[in-house]
Amino acid sequence: MLKTLPLLLLLFYGLTLKAQVVTYETAPKKAKASFDKAVDAVRMYNTKEAIGYLQEALKTAPGFTDAYGQMGLCYTELKNYTQAVAAFQKLQQLDSNGLRPVTMAYSKALAGTGNFVEALKLVDKYLVTARSKNATAEKLRANYTFAVNNSQRQVPFHPVNLGDHINSRDLEYFPSLTIDSRTLIYTRRINGRNEDFFLSRRDSSGWSQSVNMGEPVNSSYNEGAQNISQDGTMLMFTGCEFPDGKGSCDIYYSELTPNGWTTPQNIGAPVNTRDWESQPSLSADKQTLYFARETTDNATDIFVSKRLANGRWSAPERLGPNINTPGRETTPFIHADGQTLYFSSNGHPGYGGQDIFYSRRQPDGSWGPAVNLGYPINTIDEDASLIVDANGTTGYFASDRSDTRGGLDIYSFELYPEARPLQTLYVKGFVYDTVTHTRIAANIDVIDLQGGYQIAAVKTNDNGDFLAPLPVGKDYAFHVNKKGYLFYSDNFSLKDHNPGVPFEKNIPLQPLAANASIVLHNIFFKSKQFNLEPASVTELDKLVKLLQENPTIRIEIAGHTDNVGSDKDNLLLSDNRAKAVVKYLAEKGIPTTRMTAKGYGETQPIVSNDTESGRAENRRTVFKITGL
Image 1 (cartoon, rainbow, N blue to C red):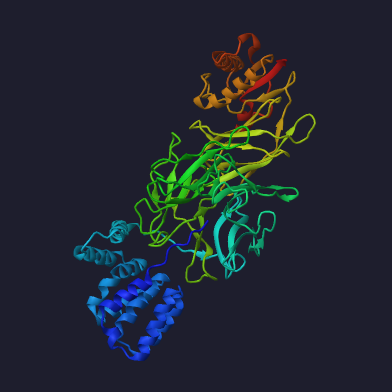
Image 2: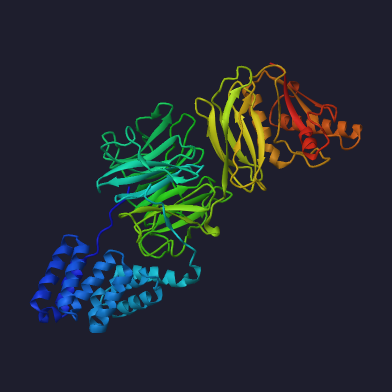
């Protein structure tokens, strides 16, 4: 949920100016009266109204230094840094000593316009003459020093307001997008009070007029900070002060069914505690949950929890020190690639407030160093809540920029290449029984063939429907399994795949029965050789597990080749390849009495050998049940 930041102590600064600058005493009565009204407006947090009174005071007394100082403070509070700098510069022209009480605000205004060099000079000068240690000034100096040292790293940034179909006079924030980039769900704070979720669909003409998602997802309680699953079937969100809450704010979920969204459920312990849990982000396979939690030792940290086999969630663990700091880490977003995490932090070196960072998953599963997204994506203010579409090219975030419809609006922008995640496509379809042709629920694993690690572990819904992410640029093994069935295997090479074109594939599963057989698509040999390639291990271990779970099954491993080479050589090669598979299974504890190996050479082609693709299909390893 959004947390209101404390306002600047404008009244304090105003009174300081009056105590130190005598021009208030010499100003005309009318100017004093306008100035006093401005101070009262500041006290009531009516900053825009205060500016109007200060303008009246300056019309009466153009050299009114206190009014210029207070004007600069007000514009700084409103983040109108250009006008703030102008007011402070006028104050400096009239009374150079008058800047001392507003030095921090002036430096912030300069930094807000991108002038970090001058902002740093101001803070350095202030600290040299400061009578005591000033934590605020030290923090600003650290921010400005970081900005100056990274001045060559200004990144391209051209945000575009999503328009009137999405944004309104109310506040809009926390955008969330499905993997096909066609469904957008976001939070809107209606009339500045109740938060509701709104939904918009995109087609060739753009985003449709957003609509309130209504009950049961929206309620009279305070819900927000939502995340729609990549397949669009699960909504994770934050509920605060709910009757069944564990703490002030908890994580809830609702699922999309043929009858609509289900009544939200508290995700429960151990994810939710007496503490504040918020800002959930669900991995593309819906098996890993990232979220923010307030802690007693580290302000706010990002945690991760895994879905267990029984459907519950594991005890959350903090992400490592490359992510979490003694400061505040919030708004985690795990990209569909499963390898790139975006988050916000005020604990890592940055430009000020909270900055947005990204981290890449390392081969050992840990997260790499946090990388600041750079200026002007990050500014001196609070920058957070970034999401990136599956293509990896477009970012979405909330901001109160000059063209806002009212307060926070949702914007999009093209993310520069270095900060992009892996472009991610997906394969979708359904799983069905080859005998009855009914749809069945099953488990799907997507494995990076080169690294041997799991990209996604997808569970279909009860109707067998699935969506599995496939980051481009790699080769993947695709395994579908269900107890009582032969598993299904396939592979996808996305090294040269046409960007933006997803796969659609319906998966047949064969019940365990005599003579049932499958092609083992992820068993690999080098040309003319029969030594198993390392990438074969994942598939072989699936086979081991199947045989362990069904200890009475007897099998044949059959090797087949194309027609290149002599019949004799091909027959020998195919026989040796089949034997290599049986040997691996035996080494894993499968009795050799349950297995036979046979090579068929080129005698049983399944397609023509006239093309390379045809020859590739004919080079295969087949698993067949010979007895139960």
